[in-house]
Image 1 (tube, rainbow, N blue to C red):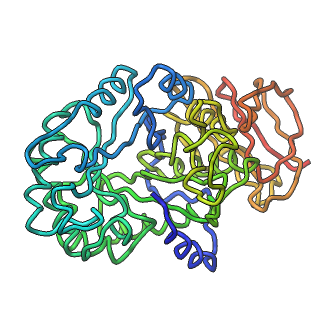
Image 2 (cartoon, rainbow, N blue to C red; image 1 turned 30 degrees about the vertical axis):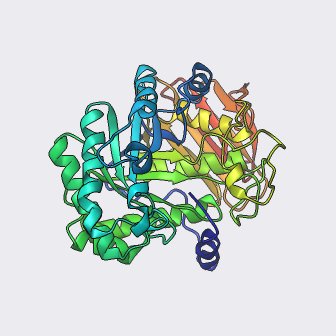
Image 3 (cartoon, one colour; image 1 turned 90 degrees about the horizontal axis):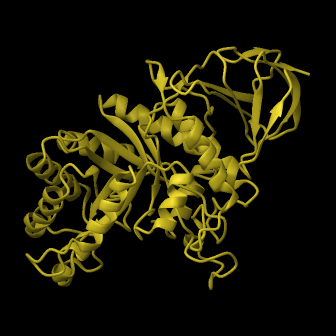
Length: 426
């Protein structure tokens, strides 16, 4: 996933201004998909214990890489047992499986080196691996993503043009093998404008249903700026498919500049999920499910890769997991209404996001102060409001007229009524 090069990207971005969290780049009303919430590296153990937490957190999409090196260690000899177990358990639990296809295999390593490059003469072999997987899991895998972060030298060592050719050929082979397959291109690190335009010009998007990207940045506001830039580029090339965030997350330790404290992790989760939802994303897959080590057990405190999880390997939970669970409980299937709630003398720095869910009858209001200052507001409603603690998952009932202190930490309110609350300055 991430590595030392992320520092360069984040430092370049420090000088950029942030985007409004509520910007809606869609012309049509935004409805949050029922399968909006996903997780990277969740469920591979296929154990009851792991899937209990997955179900508790309302995770729908499970993303893993079915490595060529693990699937076809010897040319023409395919092994599927580990992947079979994962896929069958995921389907049994009602989940959707997304698979990343990559990278090289050991039997071409003498020419490939580190495994993040496919020479032209080995593309037919790579396509055989692709076809073998798609044939086996047709109707079971819900999305196929071609490669990961190809615009990043760590994951693709060839030229841009070589990758365009590989991606185009892989998408065509998937489509030929399964005409109904959902094919995702990109997996881009952030929004590489020239790379995207080159891929489009090469015809490598012809069979794609979606493009995915990883909007890593120092904070959620800046991640949403990356999202807005990505949408702008796709509009310029007239890409009509879905937009997926196939990776986003924040380590709670280590040296990465976008490291976040445990205190602020829940806020980052809610702000990312809300910002992507109101922009019309197809889904968001959080990176990642587990830390590498249990609490205070990591042998290396410097490596941020150890600390990206929302839970620990022993299935105890970080507070960010409760924020994820609340969002995944209330946002799917809801309709975002950008002109509500009723705001009376509310300063623009206080962001509010109003979601109506006709199916469940539970409506949701998410509020925070974008300048991270304390400010009290009055919430008036004709129905009982429930206020949820994003760090613990606990909740309490508010009176018909209550005062709430709004800070940079999001507040989630829910209620079961068509009545529209009003927020006003104290």
